[in-house]
Amino acid sequence: MHQLPSDPFDAAAPRRPAESVRPRSKRAAAVAVLTLVATLLLAVTLVLLRMDRGAAPTLVLPRVPERAAIDPARPFLNTPAITWAEGEAGVVVAPATAVGRYPAEQVAAVMERVRQVIVAARLNRHVLESHDAEPVLALLSAQAATGARELIRPGNEAETWWVSAKIAEGYSLLPATPRVIGTMTPRVGPDGELVISTNYLVAYAFEAWNVTQLDDPLDIVAVDRWEVDYEWVEDSRYAEESQGLHLGATRGFTFGANCPMVRRGFLAPGYSDTGLATGPSSQPVEAYFDPNAPLDEHSNC
Image (cartoon, rainbow, N blue to C red):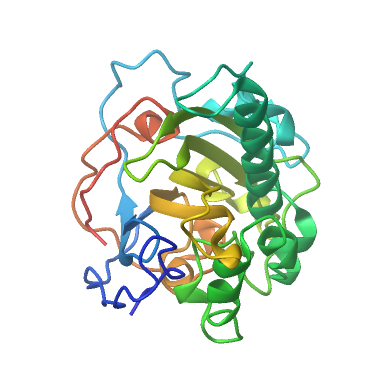
């Protein structure tokens, strides 16, 4: 069962389970699609996919070669992520304007808070490698942080994938800074809350002991894409612990990773997945690097 913290707009909201899509087999590039549909206590649908290479894309993206040498000093070479910004430079807060009852200054402050959450959850090496979520939780409302802490414990990582990325034990990132691309957009939610809708992709490059035996850059590069609605509650109708930032509707995928590890809540490189391929991908590989492409619901895992 996959859960999110309680809905600040309905503290008594029941927790309901979500079904897991069947496990899948292997191919050199994996996509794990994770969906949380919610107004803050949502059920999660965890889908794990592995994709074969598709036909040439119609998207204007760098072509991913079928085979290419891997350079650990430039691990994103021959992947579309080579054109993305490095690290938090890719998490950009655009100039804010007033949104509903929220003045531009407040919108800017909330967007900056969301930027900090994304950086902490997806780019902070301490969080990634130690699985210590406190730098993330410190940026959320007291209610959201308490709900997450109730789930965060060893062996329960599959239930807290939405809190932060977690590098699997036994695997290490290369020194290369993860590459990032995406956007954030403010709007007013149905209960008057300020919602920051985000859509970010982060590419991680992993070390490989057998790098000279690999001939696909995606064997060591995994990509997380997350579409998350962050909800800012500042309303006297709600309890003090509800004031602040919450995670709302969340969905995304992990591409190029080890599917069994993703099912357990961890990131590990695709080369470490020893399953067998089943069926073609529904999109060309390049589409999984495109923040404007629709999230693929197909699974052949």
